[in-house]
Length: 350
Image 1 (cartoon, rainbow, N blue to C red):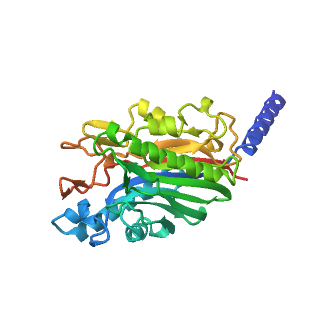
Image 2 (image 1 turned 180 degrees about the horizontal axis):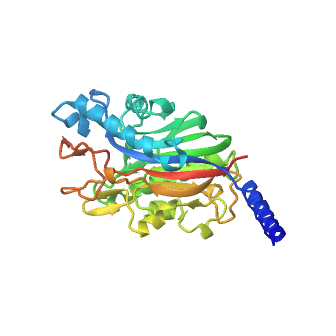
Image 3 (image 1 turned 60 degrees about the horizontal axis):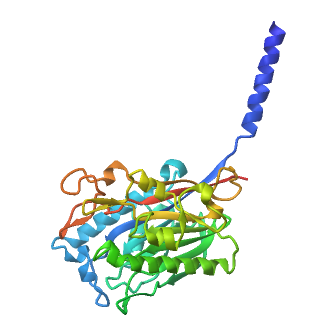
């Protein structure tokens, strides 16, 4: 009996050892997007209409408000994806920022200064001076090329001066990826009247993608931003032709994990008693795992909305909405009127 028990123990030990030797280890990186809700400095820029920003319209101590907002936003960014990666996003696109200075203040704040974030930013033709930008941790992402594209939108034969679309190409660790940062035209005047503007913005994305494909047959592209449209609107479904089911994604297609989230009632902002999911991260087919469990290169592990309890307004007219910074000309002490969105990318360690 002792011999049998000893043999069974040795067999069990061998199987456990084999199982442990086959255990896989992964690199995990976070890609994110965050609309920072009018992150403007307190200095009047005579070259643009920054006087219309909530920051400039405040009657109190603008400097105190500015640094409090910087502190709050940087705190949020430092936490996005940290549960899995133990650090802030490797790459994060941002919108509603005024200039490079506010980005430098943000990345030099106490929550982010030790992460050595790089900044890619262009001044856009937006009338108020609102721009998009990309921040990246230099130890994880190495940009090799970047360019701003204007969507060239016209309405009633007049040019719409809206945000540029920022393309950044570079290496996430040792893997070439492309990120397009967006902030499409708003719904001011109503969704139906402004729909064509966002469809034009989506069309510009298709041209950027086509340009990438001139040099790379099946590129890994992340299309991130505040689209001012839900995942089911025509700009995304008919122009970008996004797919919501993995099984339907073919080579070259674009997958949108946020469409299913919208169906399940999730949101990134609230407006006029409606909830919307305007902030999204889309990916091209090479970044999608369709069940093959092949993570020899970076693939999407999970897409999420960062809506921790402290980011939710718990009282007043906007109860249940994102805890915003500005309301009716006053500073509320909140963060942003949008929740950040983020995605984990994983690959096997060699």
